[in-house]
Picture 1 (cartoon, rainbow, N blue to C red):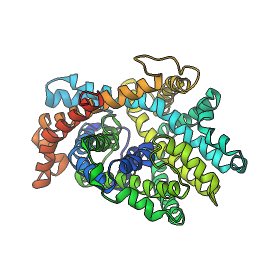
Picture 2: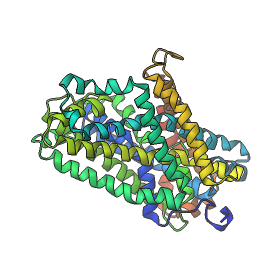
Picture 3: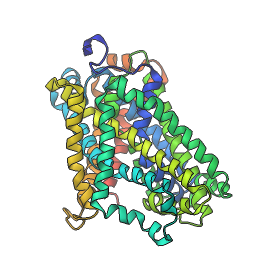
Picture 4: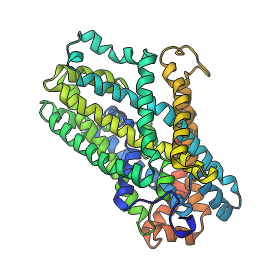
Length: 454
């Protein structure tokens, strides 16, 4: 079907909950499992959560509503959507820059995301093996360093993760993405609940809850606010084309505002539940809750290998991490694939395999940046660090800012009200947060990420 018929040529979600599961899957990733719990604990616990929720309301939700609005209005890939809407409402097809930058950002993120998510697959295999639990303590402690320093093993897991991601996207919206999230997202929540029950048996569950939720306003600072502000933007997968293309598959009778609020709530719930799982296990083993990135693959590995039933529950935990990475990865591949289908008239399968292959090839640079090319640096950063810096600090905030500005200032009031059921106070709140508040705060994120607020 054509866009004029009211449906994207790529298909559409069968119902509201499929969109919610898919968009939540895109938002829920590695950052939810380790980063959010960690930064919450380090920045005042419950006090930080309160600030974070305010930031989600002022930045994350308004920009996500704007991005879904543009996607459903355009019903095409982010590039073509922004080109057509730009010509119609913005006076120029140059607005397609937003689509190009978002699609490229998602492509570059996926190139290293498949490497990082591949670590989770590696640890599923490790923790599930009884032999791994019998290794000397120092060998278990050094297992992550051993993994990343081995280019052959990293390539194996990078390739496997890129493969399973591409297979899903190649099958299409209904037969691929929707079928995956239909089963995987409920399973992800089920795994979280099982692990939460396990964490409650460690004897340190209350200590974990206090670490996460007890407000400590003395730990709150301007830096804490900046951390909450930045994470509220990045956690919802904004500015990378994923939410816009998912919005293009949204049926016209579904309320965007209410649906986005549910997605933001589910994303935050997963992050908090992950913290409620992780920290009781960490405290039960007298380990450092402030281990940062090492918390996931070093600290918790030691904990699982030393606990009763650790092999079983550790396997479930790393499956959870891998599933979260998988649902995020498929959304990053989709914008580029949809553009090839529309502009080159290629089949979805051919488009998916080409984009997937290119991501895999670029990802080799990330694989090698941890070992063989660890000393090869540009601007004093490795290949992986440069890709991460460029996307997270420049492309995504700039994309999110422009999305909010275009949707709220340039799209006609008729189209805004048509897409958002624009009657009453909630519409007015979205309009002015998107016009003034969200762009201003994202600009602060942008300056802070560039080190200009320090």
